[in-house]
Figure 1 (cartoon, one colour):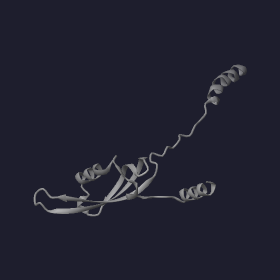
Figure 2 (figure 1 turned 180 degrees about the vertical axis):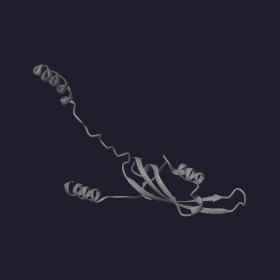
Figure 3 (figure 1 turned 135 degrees about the vertical axis):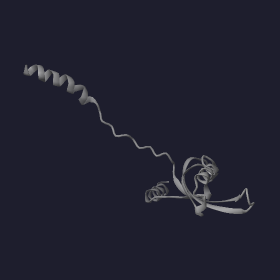
Figure 4 (figure 1 turned 45 degrees about the horizontal axis):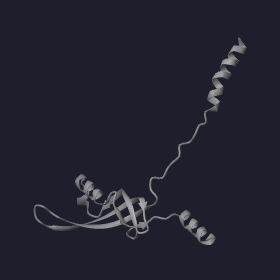
Length: 125
């Protein structure tokens, strides 16, 4: 009877022992992140009053060429509180989301590791 219990335990335990528990890999969605300042002008449909909207976007770079970057809006903050409505949030996001812009317009966020790797590349090359 003991041998039967050991045999069943061995038969069940062997396949379970071969299963490797893997940690899920975290894949970064963006090549790099940055801050983009934009200013838009709008006209009120009722009064015809023109106003300027200053917006600060946090963006992620999806693709890039030598001078252009395809970006996605992560979050944004308009300067005026009147533009915090759902309507303006949708419109201000749609203006630049998934579009190509010049890379020099963006203040790219760099980490200490990026600076260190760049210096190492300069020394080795």
